[in-house]
Image (cartoon, rainbow, N blue to C red; front, side):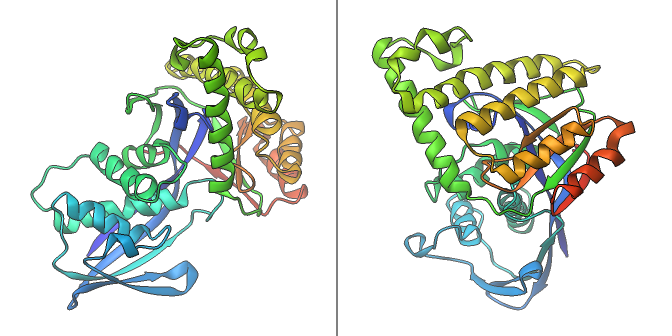
Length: 350
């Protein structure tokens, strides 16, 4: 039997920045997608999605032109086949989880990473394949194969684990020693439109940058400074200025958070202020925070939370809350009273 436990992830700083080649801060949490695979006499995989009461028959080889959108099982098989990992044994594969689905905690990427890890463990025996390679194959499976709008953050974070800064331009990462303190996740109960929100934000941010480069062909976003926001503002159409502001100022927020989290004794109060500033831009400029979710975060902050922000692409789903130990119970009560579906504590895990 092969058992895989693949975590969810939270992006703490840098939302809507990874597809621009800017750094992000993210971490894995102790909520998981579980995969249990048992050998069977067959020339296919019998995949049982327990939480959906659904079963699938997945052949070992599939025509890439016939793989339907978001069929990560077959896309993953195709990606690994290109890299010499080819199944020759049937398995009954049971999949379930305690990770909220379509809620911003990256359940889909967790599934993809878990699937890739299973295939590697079962059919790449003797090959030395590290977690960074798993991450690259997961990106190829989930993003590149389907030409989706996302970046590399989810797959890298989940494959490697822990709290980290990901340089999405160089496709490298650094583990961070600091702490965000006690964390709560709010499950709003509202489904999100990942690709819709991502696509709009990505297109508008890149269009704003194009206008800046028309004014200054040598402009380099990675070398940008806070003053560049106002410097180039008049070069950008009014409808794109919010995306330009978010691009520059969220980058500054992320750089500040990286410096704080590089220290073991990081300041949670400073991080909370940065998180709230990040959320302000996500809500007002990216416009990815429905009123219901905004109200739930406001209630958490009014009850004593240090910081709060929406998680993932937005438009619905989950939020993360930084909170002092002494205020956990009070903040939880306030969140549930505001109409949230659930609220639960999480820990950063390796």
